[in-house]
Image 1 (cartoon, helix red, strand yellow):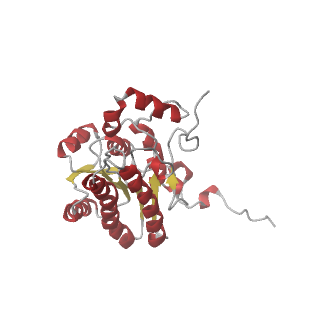
Image 2: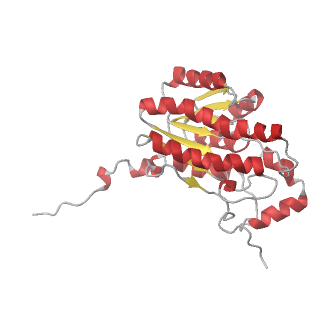
Length: 270
């Protein structure tokens, strides 16, 4: 009698040649007008996903759309306004009838010492980075839980793991997003996966504003053992992994594409 094998490739839960595929996945990208959001939107479009470009910056959406080659949808979305989020989701559902992947990316930063940061400034960062992300996650989560399928990816930061001065508001929101991601992963299991990405400093418009401070830039660059900041397109691979079947056992996780910065915080070459 021939012994039965434990498994064969033909019995896998996905085809190995398609495990990293995002082709035809309906993918909402909030913050698609610039930076990491734009890179993810363009990357997923190039890989055959059906991308929803969502941002409050309509001019930026139009510019990003010009670079796309596939099936896209443009929609204005203000993460602080529930009705705006709901309208964008309704527009998406009317066209595609489902949401497979959702990226919650928008974020701002006000870099000041804690004693100089006003309550109004602190609240502004929280309302966009933390509350806005939760509103997007909650509204899309309703759809994903109802359809019993979906992958949600929230944008955290390496500052969800370590801390730096002058980042009290920003770091607070990114730590909260990490914990929020874990809670949502538990509540929406087993059908909906929720993960987060925590990049190092990426050369986005937000970061380029402070890169002109040469002293600050050099000190931060040296904390990264690759001795550089990342490019927006370098986050796309992590995004594809979390959106695809390749990450089917990942939920509640924080992945850190950070050039080794978090692991080696405080290390200085001698």
